Image (cartoon, rainbow, N blue to C red):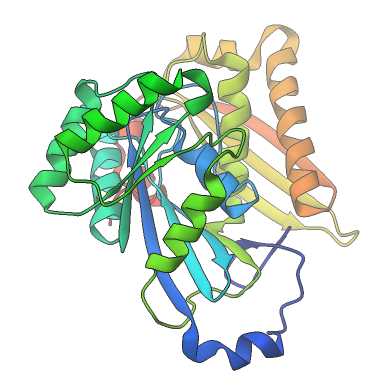
Length: 320
């Protein structure tokens, strides 16, 4: 992968538009699909599978996605712009409120809204709350039941019936975002639902997420994977330096913000071993993604109320 002039993620495909695309421009379709759901429903995993590349981080920690990530997939003459929204849950803090507002904002702007459900949770309180939100906004939606490999088929059919009785979904899909089962059918359906119009992104662009932010997200993913049982949710990573070096490598400096000194000690670990492991994992993934050597330097700072800071919420795309 590399960075285009807008700082977004693109593939290594050549930038020149093929003749076939020029001839078919009158038939092109393009639109937005917002995937909403409770935390850990599998939204980021599904987005990555639909796009065919990693554009959103995935961990088993709830509320991992904090910002609206736009990812781009092409099916025939249709360009689908997926919006990976934060999970919808009952907010307790200013950061929570901003994330939930961003999720509903993504749904309001979309041509198609897809409610993604972890079948193991069923029609629980959080999914009922989301359905009430859909009713309040008057939005139509499709239902996507995820993790179908983890439930028996009779129970799956009962669950689909229960959801469709609770809300008039336009269509129901059953998928395993992790294994890819049913994903292509969903993708083709969405391609057909896109309204006629020109493509909004170059054919080789995978996401509108700036690489500086994506790099910070990858480090945050490694942080959560390493310390999900020890580190509270309120940690944050920012890329402070992105330097292209003469030898083609990249120097990246990032700050991990935590809220207390005790959390800083957890991130650093005994003899610095924990932060070294986090840095190594993030550096390896960034090098593979960018196709270049990455020199990654991590620093840990304490900032008690970063999650209430309007500037940081704005940087995450959670405030206008």
